[in-house]
Length: 423
Image 1: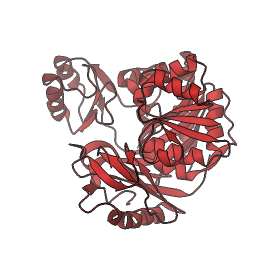
Image 2: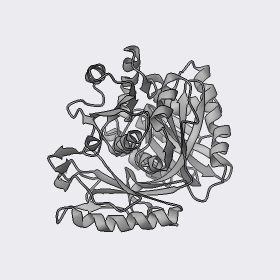
Image 3: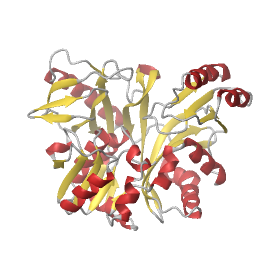
């Protein structure tokens, strides 16, 4: 197969890395791609992930057999719809299915309709409405902007008073992340967070793996939400049959709901969960592979992952084409030191990284400049290590980072959390 991956972040680099190892993959193309994907195939750096016409032109010109859509903004913009309408084989849900991620209001009401366990919530469209709704909440409150906000549209508040401060800033300054005026208020749940990923072919939805990620910038979950500072897989401290529990309580009713609403969902469903005393409850849905979870899941895949995704896109998953091993993987995200408050542009980074065995590194948004790499800053690189246990993988990844830092130009302002997968 000739495969085109849409997107240019570390998630797409990790997907490219794994798809390149698939027996059925003959050639890889990336739109726009990054410094890592450039080592495995052809990048189209001038093609934005939301530019359907340009993506389709490249797909036809290069006889592409399968298009894998990575980022949420492309799915929300209907890229998968238009590519399918043009006769392309696409892994990624249509815009209507992607509303499970692109609209938190849609997702919460979908769960309400189909009795999927989640937190109690209220929808508001103004500050005055928010004040009245907050009277319904006695404990912690989570404030969520309705639309896509690059992982930065959620604020967890200790009480209604703190939530009102956030809402006042958003409404009075017209600064709701992602735009608009629509906000979800929900009760803060207690427990441990876990992410479960399922592959759907329009008729079936199969949980494939789980991971735990770290969203805040600083150690011990301090600082602002960043979208992801690291992850590990498989999760620790959860029931051994976690995938079966989630399949029964969450994924099966999600699939029934999609089918009842005539939605043919072909792609991946990311289920963000809070594991409470009463079991899993949904925090959020994403309509694509997560970042940085993908970076720690792909090293665990064995088999022909390209065939697995293609069969789902065709409408009949070949469940034996690939599987996840018992091996553990830990990933740590290296960012510029002022992230997420500001991004510091970097240049002159080494294109070839010297990495130990069982270690991989995936570039975030970046471009090649000869034998060097330029980055706009933010989440620059995700370093991962695999081992028989999470503890061993953690030890390996931090040792690898220690050896990696001297390879960067002196004074390169990189930061990372030191507590990923520390228990």
